[in-house]
Length: 547
Image 1 (cartoon, rainbow, N blue to C red):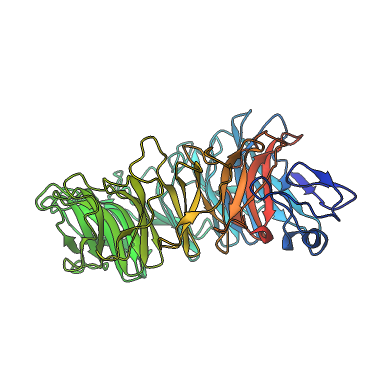
Image 2: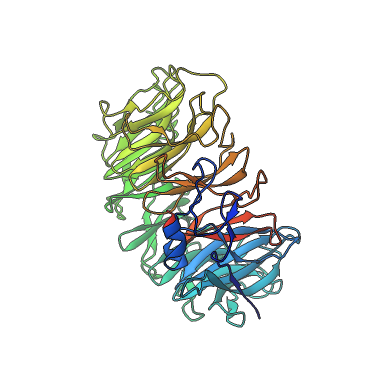
């Protein structure tokens, strides 16, 4: 067993804060927020570490130098954090359990190596019944279902679904759905083909739900969506083609909902989405109307086309389905107006184009549809202002340009991107041609749409032209990567106000720590970053008190 404890204590006679400056912790460090984060004197002296904002701390040296740690998966299970990492130099994967054992003032984690030197990534990581569930290929049984209680000896094969060296799962399987104490998935046992299975995390509770396509044939069920007490999914039984099915988790309760494209043809239901807990929408092609919007309540009589948006058999190319309140927003092309935003509440009467933003057949090509309460925030190009942020409440009068950030259709500018909702605001990146590509925020009103902060002052960009995601943390705060000449590529966070915007300096000076995905578990926000010290790129954490 490999077991390590890492403790980083921020107090003492001297310590380095986030702006590569050292000094007594008793003194306030005055640093411009655009270049580095800081701690107040009171925050640095009182309370346990997780209850005050400190600089990022090392969680564990999971891949000792010269290796680097790349996080590829994580799951929190009963207070413990399980992470799978890719070890860069060795090109292998490993699985760890991390547990915050600080207790008092010192940030401290217990780290336990569960599996190492893996050729394939253990995935996905799912918590069930106080244990971790994942798939893994140990080189003997193929990729099968595994479980872990957080100890090396308790990390083991759950069941060899496809007996022998063959695999029950493809590489990096994705169609897993957890409902209460059960997980549903598709697997191939070598006898029934790829079919619907479920597990409660025990060998005895892992079983085939139904052999939808009898024999060796595969029905290939998925993706899955919860519809009340049922699970809806697409599957092919070898008779009706790929159609809409439902299950209650039993063999007798697994049945075809409707043969939308009659006979052996496939309607291929896609983009299943539940709206307001009373309707499930999806797209399907019945062979008559082309691929259009459908809805279901899980019954044959309640499964029907909502509207033939592009009349005839061509289909309306429906994309980007988003639920906001009781409405479904999406993009569609009716063959007349081009691709524009549409809205539906489940009937032909209330399914309509929201607005013909760019008149004519070209369309405004809405992107990044993002729900903000009952409203929709998105980007569109009206042919006059270029691609800019818009909002809609589902009505023509309530659909409007939020702000012409880059006046006119400026050539070569970076359009708004990475729209991300966080507690009543939508954050995104935009270029106003004056401050460069920087973080912006909107509350859904023109007056509430503004630059968060010019982090890299002047026309230079703090955001890459190929931007990284924006990560919601908590209480309206988001985290993201920025570039500042004096600091390199570092982690920043904000709640949308200039005064709250902070930037760390994990790698000294202009060196880049290149932080990775930010996620929350327990009392910490975790991410990988390179400090260019003895540990190089490793998992680090910020107290949630910083957000």
